[in-house]
Length: 110
Length: 110
DNA sequence: ACTATGTACTTAGTTATACTATGTATTTTA
DNA sequence: TAAAATACATAGTATAACTAAGTACATAGT
Image (cartoon, rainbow over all chains, first blue to last red; front, side, top):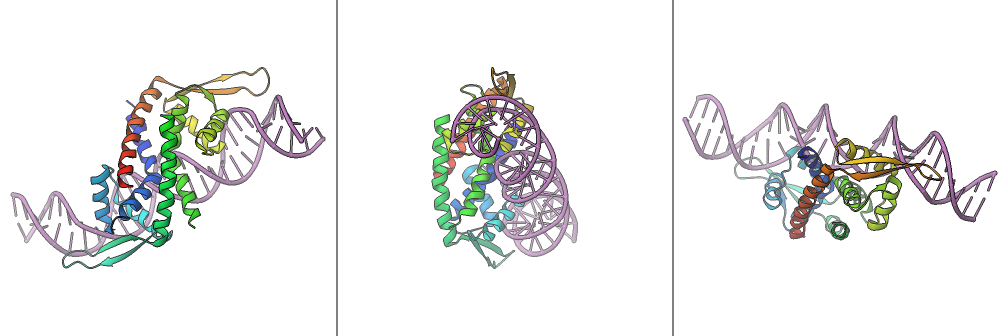
């Protein structure tokens, strides 16, 4: 039917929800980038391109919501683990409130 | 605190939700642009810039989700009323399903 | 030994969309 | 008569997801 519109729409919905989802997932435990992509795909069925995730992580770091550390592996490439900063935790709380609010508004309209 | 991040985030969340909200509101009855802005502000507390709404309406028309008609007023500037096309109604149904799905996923993460 | 696939991170360029600012025009209110 | 509200429109900017490509190592299959 109008699959193309729906597809574009999905992509636009991600702008905003992706950062929220990343912060929510990281609030449980720290993860490295590739693992985040897998985890989010598993939890939400949302596919995140690598070219989307890594720049997103850098923005969240610049905004002081996340910090990261390199962890050497016994074998293979080192992994960059991301975790919430204090400010990240506070901001996530606010985002949750805003999200709940938006949700209620839309539910009412539906 | 991190008001600037939250503000930018809100703006990003709109990309995607705005078109959804517009379609939801129009599914109840037809409205003209300026009225839509007022109605949505009233219902959702979301402020939509005119420079955001009118281009959005044109995109939705190009995508055949909406159509519009000019209605002369006895006094004042004519109004352009927007209404859902058949395809718009079908697409909105799909969007609702997708939204519910996303909502459930995020609720679980929260 | 070679190839494909999976893991892991990065960046350049494109596209879509909200925002700012500005412009036009009419009507109502102070 | 000036300001504010009503009503639509567009050009330019910023943001963020996507595509595509690249680097590097490990492992499984042939």
